[in-house]
Image (cartoon, rainbow, N blue to C red; front, side, top):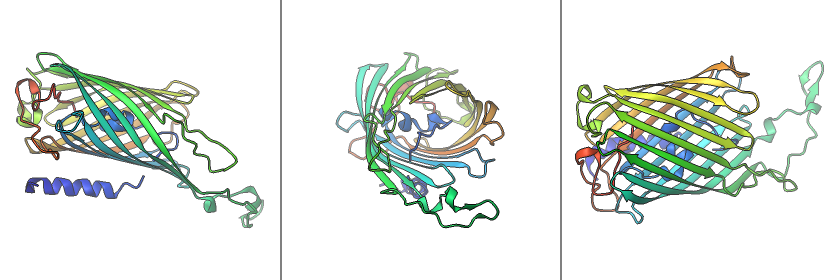
Length: 364
């Protein structure tokens, strides 16, 4: 392995050390564009090379017990793989309820590539993994422990249920259509996915049942470059890079909850700026504006790291005064790294990489 890969790989391993697992009602990240495999496994290996992503979210920091979550994924797009798609790993963890409940998920993902023509390609993806939920019965406070005068002073008579940890298999599928125009200055994708297909039973009680609800996701992204062609920005000086505009949106449905997020990001001089409108569409409507800023640093012409920060500004609904949410993400890209032999190829006119049909450069 080339020496220049050593430090980025050490960085990826450091990211991994901070992640230890996922899932209750699925976390909704404002930077959905920084966690594409989380929402749709078909994004696994959609571009050649390696992508490693780490994201931390601190939700409602003004509350006594904020809701924190961690996400890590790494995927490899290698056209020497059978199916010419990619393979990936995804780990997710959150700790709702003042840490009394811990949710963990770990999955492998596979993407299969189906070329349509020079300017259009589709991928289908599968996620297979586990979902684990843990409850800390010992830290719960029950009514028989409470004194009206002295507070929590009694020993509870509560007998904990059969188990405090529940681990079940979990599966998801998705598809994505990626396209670009002949001039190469417009590219985008449209995707649809279903997660928790078999609605696993996550009940802690042997006498009860609690099926985890399926999640349906629809998403689109359109990237417009103001310059001629869509050649990778890492091949040119930041001052010469054309302005890029990313317009996108994501819709989610899980059980009786519906949410929508739409907005745009700008990229110029290696700096990202964006604003996204987020709203729930059922029950009590809560609306927020997610403000995004970030920076991309290029190690080499085919290797870069991206830092992104976003803040959810709550503008309406019952969640005002909770402090919104902070998100921080790190994304490491190694465009030409190939593990299964051969080469991903160099860049060619129009921004397409390698010999595969349409390696469409994305915004991130």
